Length: 321
Image 1 (cartoon, rainbow, N blue to C red):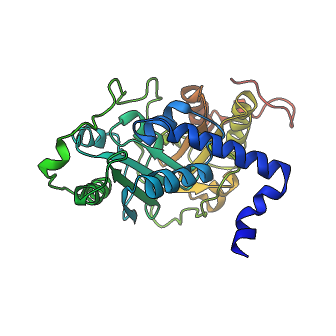
Image 2 (cartoon, rainbow, N blue to C red; image 1 turned 45 degrees about the vertical axis):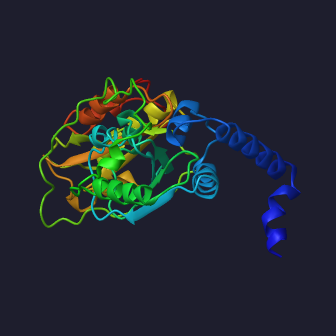
Image 3 (cartoon, one colour; image 1 turned 90 degrees about the horizontal axis):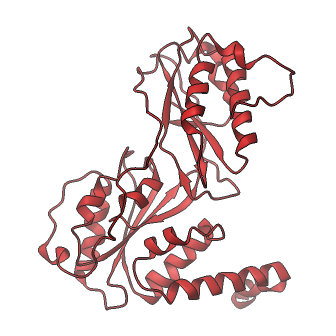
């Protein structure tokens, strides 16, 4: 019975071809050397979805190479983890891979010694799963590998740790030339706290069909209108529709008070989003563009000048980008 279940995917042409492609890709990656996070980052292969990356982690790191692991559902949100790359870059005695289960993007992995790769995680969310793998790329693992995984997880959660000298001596050096910050990011705006006594919109994270390779940080748009009302909402809908018409492979996510907003209409209900509070957005996908322009338009749409986006035919898409 178990064998039949495991082989059921091979009973159709699409399932069989998908399995063959996965096996070929796995053999290609397994035949290489170096950090698995670096390898997948450089491949930038759209077929390496969350599910397939999860299989690679299990088969290559755990079953084949015997990497030690440490995992936790994060106890708090972490704004910027790229600063950790400098510390992990000193851990030459062990190979590290971090895997983060992002609520919108699915499973993401990175070499934590690379700030550029860590930046793809964005903000770590509270209660989401983070797993750290530590090993020696084919050599038999030891107690230091388990200690490295445990200590790395503590660092991700914001704790201070004492790193044994054995973890700093070895051949597993950080890849040279890694960038510490992404270029040309739009300026994030520091917003006033939300008004007291108003309940934030709550929504459960959803898994989207496609798994983008990257996601920007969240950027704040401060409400300049007295109230973020129905006109502001309609302006935002038209701005986002225009952006996605120009960039159909990109997704725009909206957040308020730390929670993802699935229905923008909920932002003006009960007058909860007032002047001076902030609505956040992020863009996900490959080849992310025009984020700074999107931020400027959304800022205008959240002000008294929102009417500029409501002119023209009702069902027409604005050409803003």
